[in-house]
Length: 553
Image (cartoon, rainbow, N blue to C red; front, side, top):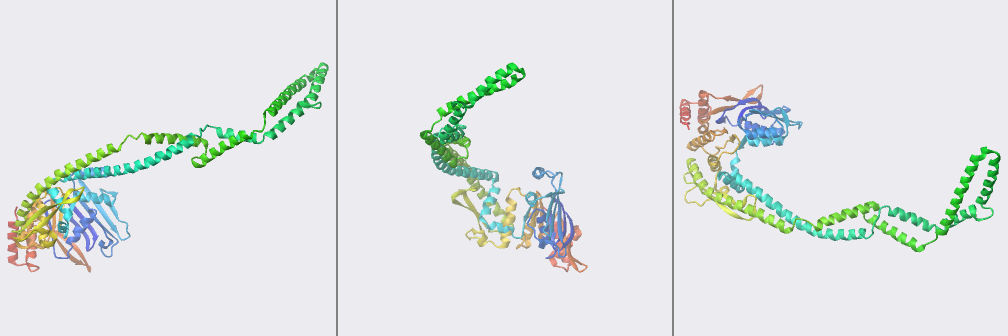
């Protein structure tokens, strides 16, 4: 629950420190004193939308701080822990607004995001503004209220999950069919491409070998001339180099017999002769072997042209072409051997739809059963709120297409006068009737909202005995939750567990809001003021005292 609220530089509020208790906390005061500004400040610290217009005139920054007692609120503690914030029995929240646009949020002293604050705020405080009852005019809200009354919110959550899974499976099936069509096209394309690559019978290093052979064949005549001429130069005639070298080698043998120091030189010449002789023979053999072969040259050129076309089409190198062919073969094998069939996916879709329909039918039955009980309990509540002939009827309409909320939509119809046909709320209910209807709903719906409820002038449009009933109803709500109510009605204020008066004061030429927690005496005086105006009479004080005595549960 909310225990402390500190406000600084918000609208006409300069500095304000408020402490709150359990039960029904009433905020009263003259119009314009700042009661709703306090609610606006609480909205800010719970993650509501902010505007620089809220910053007090002449100030650069506004701050709101709140302390919540979260003892026993395990959901809040878990959320804090998961978000990385420190936890304990208290939660400190601070929000700063700046005209420069540097707004900041702190949770338990650590910087936080606005979305984190808003999520916590939704779990801590529910604020029903002056026009909150207008939500009753929205038929889409009616089904949620009915499901809450039926205790079927968890079932509805399961239904939404089942609907989402059904729709996702339906999308998967559509996607599957698209993929099947695409897979068929892909198989045809891969088959053609793989055949084109495979039929080439690619080999590693083949291209380099072909290019080298192409160069040789293209220059066969030149190679024949060079090698043939070389043979003739070394071995072919009377003046051949090997003949001359032979004579030199023979002469060196005689020289060595005379001077043994020439032996190494003789050995060198012998080896040179043998090497040149071997080279001459290889030149002869090469010249005899090399010949022009236009047919082979054309075959090689055709093969290189094929490799070039494949490289231009698929990959820059033969090695990458071979790798691509392998990848294509694997993908083609996977496509041809897909494990998931359309029949399997269709069966899954049928099962998901059947689950959705089963939950939707169960929820629909709960709704119709709960609708009768809700009509009965609402009738009892609204009769107590000075609408003795009013009735609320729940009607159902089957949807053309199911939604995540089920097969039907619900709408509350209302009639305030005996004999009149119940019609949509927006067409027949006045503002005061809507306020009372909303309060009636709060009485019959199970607890499940945040631990702190705020009603900002929810009693608009009611008065007299009805206002006293409204006060009693609010006090009844406050037995299970902390409740705040901004009111101008003394009949409501009399039911306060804690009564806070909000008033304006002028200091140094500026207006500021101040608050005062009322004891029994000052509370009596405030209620008398609410009854009689600024001139409090003895009769008004007596009447106020009587109202406080009667405000007992």
